[in-house]
Amino acid sequence: MKNLGPGLLATLLLALAAALPGQGQVQDNLLPEALRGVDFEQRLGAQLPLDAVFTDATGRQRPLGEYFGPRPVLVTLVYYECPMLCTLVLNGVVASLRAVDLDVGSAFDVVVVSFDSRETPQLAAAKKEAYVASYGRGGDGTGWHFLTGDEANVARLAEAVGFRWVYDEERDEFAHSAGIVLATPEGLVSRYFFGIEFPPRDLRLGLVEASGSKIGTLADRVLLFCFHYDPATGRYSVATLNAVRAGGVLTVALLAAFVLAALRRERARAARA
View 1 (cartoon, rainbow, N blue to C red):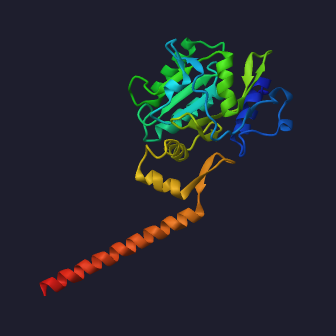
View 2: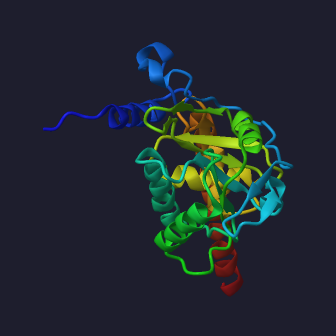
View 3: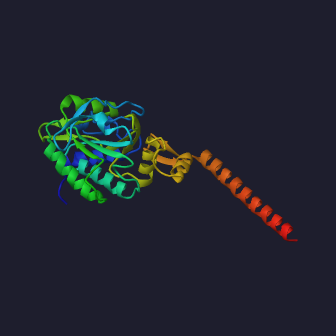
């Protein structure tokens, strides 16, 4: 077996760190010195800088706020020429979204931002085309936004979501964590999911919650009552007390329906007698 190069080893360490419970990170003293400073700190409720200006895949400059308003937004920071980890994140996002029966562009938007200010709209356009095709639901890519930006605007967005990276000048690569952020239509940070795989059920619940239950179904709202988001793990787990309450309400409702049906049958028999 070939030895792992330092770049690949660093990427694997960061992928492992991002998948661990907690803040999507490990202690600095457990990482190689070159990776210290890499972080993805949860800032639930933080306001994204909606006036920050980014360039879309067509070369048009637009404020971040133009991608917000009617729907929740899935946000992730990557760089398009990343040799491994960013591709794994984007692949994981698309794989999960394919299993969620909420459509990008109608129920929510996806905003992908390159944190490498040297990258171009042409790179963004190529990534957008590839991932819209991989999503496989047709259309013209409405709701998918692959952006680039200058250092100042990227730094504002990264600071708002707690995302920090380290540039390795010798290798011309970035060390960074992996994960995605869900934001409300108003641009407030709602949920974090760390790692490179995102359970479809959790992602769906997160989107419904970020929307204020304006998307999804009654079943989703019941699930949100019975499940709660754990910031320590970035996952939804059973809220035992709420589940018991919901079960009790369901039992009472079923019992009431049974009694009502029995009374109606008795009245029908009496009317025929």
